[in-house]
Length: 261
Ligand code: GLP
Image 1 (tube, protein in one colour):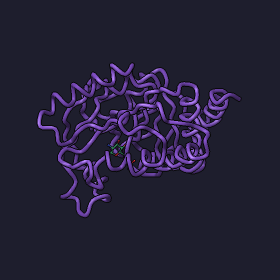
Image 2 (tube, helix red, strand yellow; image 1 turned 90 degrees about the vertical axis):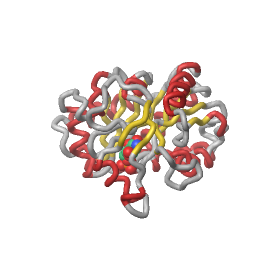
Image 3 (cartoon, rainbow, N blue to C red; image 1 turned 60 degrees about the vertical axis):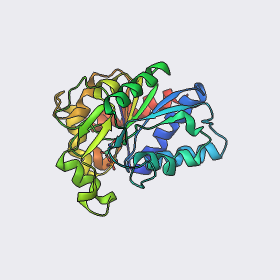
């Protein structure tokens, strides 16, 4: 696991965007797993800028998103399909037909989830999975207590997540109670994971995920069992990590190497 601790969210997002852009240049047909939430927004803007500047093209890239709220139309401004179009897809040269978000309106939820898993497999699997982390340690919508080998399925949001996400809706009651989400087992099959966390309200979750025991109570802690995780954060999110000074210098070194010196 490589931890890159930057002074600010902007700096960390730029570095994470560089890592993704570098991978896309190496493999223009790469399969990306993408995340929503406020965390990756700056990184997505950076990638859009790179694309506009001709530094990277997404023309042959395929993507699958982590999750979607149950019951929201894709045109609803809080649906994750809407978010992805607005924050990334509308600003890069990706073919929207190659972008996939779970259908939160599916009547046969199991069939939807099984088909999603199959599509990912048929595409050769996810090469890079982008993740954020919930303040309770969740990844995608795998809440505390989720099976560490879970697959894509319908899940119930915890009161903490409903409260955290209420800021995007008019009122907390408007936040959907259910979502479709890639499972932890699904996420762990990605060849590389890039996880981002910013701000003091993520400090406990980050410490739990990277220095705590591997436990379903902190779903992100399973990433300790993944061989290729890159974690980008700002100083506030890293504040509770005991080994943060060590991670900081080492992370910078390996990132330089990875980006070609
Ligand atoms: C949601 C998403 C997660 C995301 C999390 C954190 O619950 N399902 O994928 O990581 O929120 O959101 P934010 O980045 O806004 O803090």
